[in-house]
Image 1 (cartoon, rainbow, N blue to C red):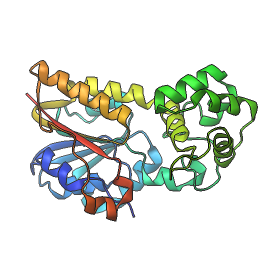
Image 2 (tube, rainbow, N blue to C red):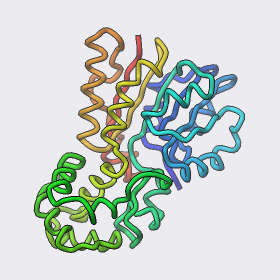
Image 3 (spheres, rainbow, N blue to C red):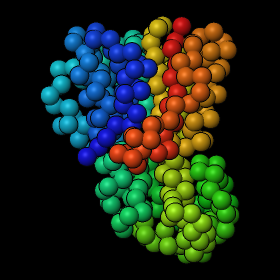
Length: 286
């Protein structure tokens, strides 16, 4: 079962109004979308995601609130076009949960997980762009090493990249995991390929660039008095959010609602271990 991360804190900080219009731009399987829709009367939730397969599942999961939700497949950089297509100038609140969806993580054929063998895909939108296999099997050793470090701060990135190139062709997720584990043996409870997989996922989906685009678009997307909540799971992402929010406040365009990052409670981490690395920051537009 999909459990939305830091739901109580998210709803409190968004200060949801029954007549408001809210943008859940990482709808995933619809957990946060459902909670938002439940609090509306005449309002609307715009549920977007770049993963059409997750979005279709979200549509089914939120069927009880279909009259209050509009779905649109879009990456962050495409959100202005999505709102324009729906005839909405700005929204009263925006939510982004930057973690991958449960559907992606539990479907071996998507190539996101280390728990079962599958094709090295990792695309959130399987209709476009290069796969993880394309990148590990065609890019130079330097390109792979640089990308592992840039997108995931992977230790021993150069050694891992050299091992990947030497082991080509790499044909599956567990094949890649084995190659990485030999190059960088386990030093913690996490599988030694965990960071490499996260970095590859972010490289394949250009997640860094898309987050930068979203943060730049916030003033264009959110109305004065509207609120933004972003939940990240990596220090790289949290730093970007923190810097962007502080700059908007410095410029007098927004007010920080979270002077310090908010983390999930001990109770939430116990009941939903996937939330353990989550970091939440919130902002109100002026």
